[in-house]
Length: 79
Image (cartoon, rainbow, N blue to C red):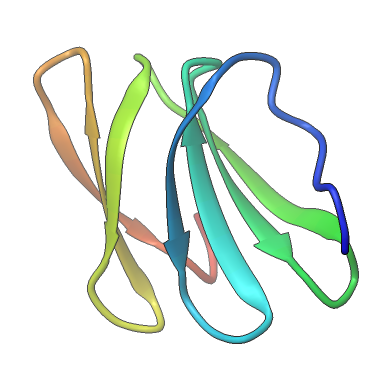
């Protein structure tokens, strides 16, 4: 079992992309892409507001919702 650390506030949403990749959204205004196998954060995307929800559309597209009343589309590969 692994513990992935990096967020500085509450984690509000987690999405599974594959057996190795998960994505988390937090009240620290970041979205983090994690490798379970490597047990580390691969990429951090900084947002303008708290992340309240995430949804993976495909292996490369992520949608986030946040407190600033926006929905944003993200590339999982590039942020």
